[in-house]
Amino acid sequence: MDNQWINDHRLIDLRRTSVLDADVRAQIRDGTMRRLTAEMAVPAEWYDNQTPWRRAHIRAVAVGLTVDAGVVSGPAAARLWGIELLSIEEQVDVQMPGGTHPGAKSTWTAGARYRSTLLPSGQYADHDGIRITSKIRTLADVTRFNGLVEGVVAFDSARRQWPGKSTETLLADVGELGRMRGIARVREAVRLSVPNSGSVWESKARMILHQYGGEAVTSLEVQVEFIDEESGQSYFVDILVNGWVILEIDGRGKYRGEHGIPTETVVIDEREREKALQNLGPVVIRAAPGDLEVTEGSCVMLRRVLDVIDNHTPPRHVPRVHEPEAA
Image (cartoon, rainbow, N blue to C red; front, side, top):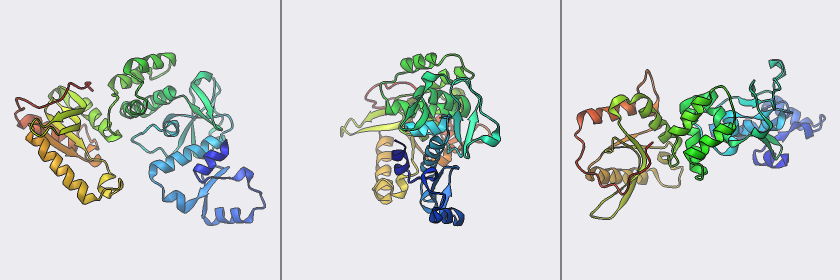
């Protein structure tokens, strides 16, 4: 029911509010209540205090409950499916079912961006009052309209959540979508995706190394397990470059105490972990999301990795537990 979407996101359905409701009118006028669409409003202070990705999710719901015939698609649909992305979209992508073209821009729902593209009936469905593109159509649209990197990030996230989806089954699913512009890029994103990327930032780092590492980067592996042969302690690392350079991506939240662990404890534990991994032979590089900002084909993380490859001698032996799937 619509009410579940509304209750979960503290939305006010203005269609069900009497035009004589002076309190609601006053709150919208003074900014206490904020319209997200002509028909959906939300408490402004509460909304502003949400994370950027949570606000994007709320906007997707508001637009989805407002459009009469449109289907939420692209990044907004990905959010409703629980698929993680890098970017935060300000507008909600909407497509019209079948071959229907969207009307004039002046008639578009506030906060929505309508895309003219064929959407067959089997590629979307109604979910409790909101029409959303199917999972595979959503992933394809993210890749087609938002680029290869965002597409790989989305496919990685989907495979992390739905481990039954292999490269082969995803390629078969993409084939069922039929002919569409950008489908070759979608297939490339599937082939570059992995089932065990730990986060969107790890996915982005891997793609930077793939796209800009050149001949210096000969292999990329994810979630590789190392073992200290003396203590028996095992360690999983985010990305292993060329079989001996460990790249660990630090998420933004864990240094702010957002996971319930004091920041000081996190820092000490990571230093101990890094020291232990270094003692096993590989070189360890740490990078934060800010180190992944690419300018003119390079970034802080990439320069660090290439510097290690150029200036260090690979160890003769690294104590890996098994050969993981290549990225």
